Length: 167
Image (cartoon, rainbow, N blue to C red; front, side, top):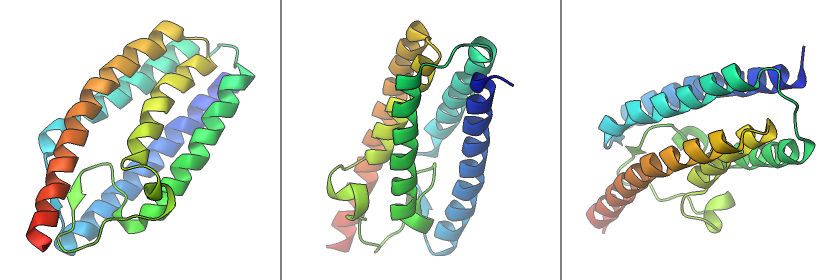
């Protein structure tokens, strides 16, 4: 088995596990009164990520792994774990606002407003670069930037509205 297959299998299993965790956390948040905001763009996010990962399986399964980019990717995974651990049961792949709950301001959220989106944006570029797929990294980074612009705008609006209601 090649290093590329091992890495792609890891990322695939990681994403599937995160989807299960997200579903569980979303359900808990909704049971506590959480409200999903702007769900219309969610299928686009899922499609983009599925196409990104599926394309990598097609193009990179036998590629040589570049050690530098692999190291960057591993660091991003540590940052991802820190983000998920910081948010705990409030981490989800959807935008779910829990009215009355304070914003998380610990962990990486002390330094960045949206650290998860930074990690995702970097992963979209770095994993293809790990396999030498520069054009692929650029193309999906541009597509992801468009989706993230919509998502961040929706999340910021929901958080602002929620803060106004609390005050």
